[in-house]
Image (cartoon, rainbow, N blue to C red; front, side):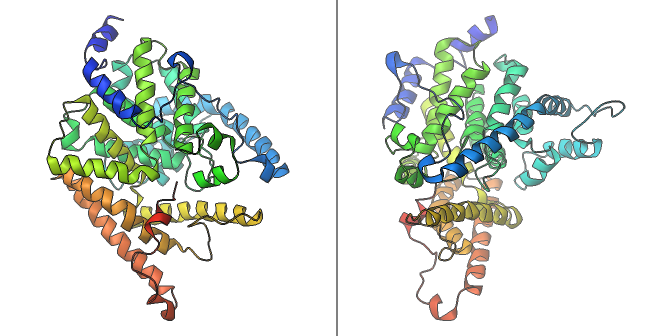
Length: 449
């Protein structure tokens, strides 16, 4: 405990003035609500249907039963998976004699080799997920916690850490083409790359790194595969609970806090520290709400124009972590084409599924969700033009000089050109002149969630 008390007064416990500044930043928009006596309200995992049963009725109930059965089978394998992950992270190869292993020696060796290059931007998260038998998020997080020494620094119980990470990974829905655990692992790997940027690396505290990785891993947990407007127009419980504001992001945060408490991961820390961690996680996760893009972008741009960012201040570091998580969340167009295209097709497939569901139940089809009218190239060109480029232009200014930032900007431009070629190759010549370059309007693109 003496070590913890030192950290409480030092790196882990923020100075009161800085802590107040962070709280003001987090509470300014009133989104971090608490219950009676300031106790944070959490959501019980899996207690709500994915979408309103008044719409799906029998099919939804059947889906819940099937999902429950799959989860039971998955959890039966969890202990073996955790053992495999632990051996992998220690660099120990399995002894195949007389033992059952989910991964053979060759796969473990390839996964370990990939982990040695986890800080490179061309990291193939799809391959890594296959090599870890669908445990990319748990394996990656355990590895990064060891890289930064966070297990030792915060005196974390490894069993509780595995339990928490397993809950997070399980509560992503594998049936989602895009918002699944592989996306969470991809965002976490991108966040690690950003934390290594020289402008940040020398200033970050262990608490900053802990928060950044945790928020990246859990930022979309229990995502239903439909966007906020869908939840609102179907009168979903979550839309009512959060008053139609940052519905999904609020749910991701509250679910994360629920899992933290259920696993007991932070139970050994003083109450004020664990509560501060919960609040800061909420501030980071809520920053991924795409409807707040202009709000964060304007503030970021003002800081860079005024050159007044001081990363020795906890409140400024927290803001940069919000920006870094936003960048990591939408960094797919910054990847090499082979990876970027896979992500683009996955997110559009998820949009189209929502559109098909809306059409099936005689609802107005949401923007970008009509497969007949909204092509993948057009959606991606609009997304890059109105969301990705403006944010990464400012990130490039912040990190300059940065080889990684130069690489990402190069990929953005190449990928946008590739989508443009694909779009116009598949567009009738008589309609090309009528469509503006970039495709889609700003309002439509900002409807993505």
